Length: 259
Image (cartoon, helix red, strand yellow):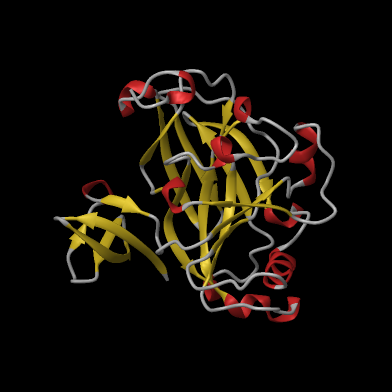
């Protein structure tokens, strides 16, 4: 099943896919453009992987990581399907990152690889934007790169785990203004989903609503205000997002400081 969370008629609603639109939990049917899309689950800890595709690491002049390169993100970083992400005026290279997001469904502590999928609720699409200008030191990525408000689009659907027979063989694609810019496959991850769950749960307890962003393949390119970016993963969904400048957010100054 494909599940969503949307704001509509003054409230937040659970919804499911219904043809070209949505069916709300109260039975109402609405079009995709009649609602505000939210992250399709209630987010808790957001765990993100860096350089988890060898070719992407190579294009950024880094080697493949011997163990996962992990960082945390706050919930304010997330924006839903059809949302807008800001490009600050001082950014010279801001790029998309299409990623398979793994949503945890029940607590996981010291989980063996063979049992890892038992703790997965489902999967969604993430587009985790990065501003390369904001990298400051070797301890990467830092707060301004990956924890900006609305810098990570996610959704539109949470697809049930059992509806995805093999999450490690899914095609990923990103288009910018209709042109294909990035293609890859989850089979090319350096550290696969069971490895990540086993490794993470070995030192931290994962809980329902935690989400693991599993990294992006090669093919990142600069995006500008006005660009429409679509991150798509086979069998999971098509996540649309638009880039806007500081003026759209009432921001100005270095790094887009509040005016």
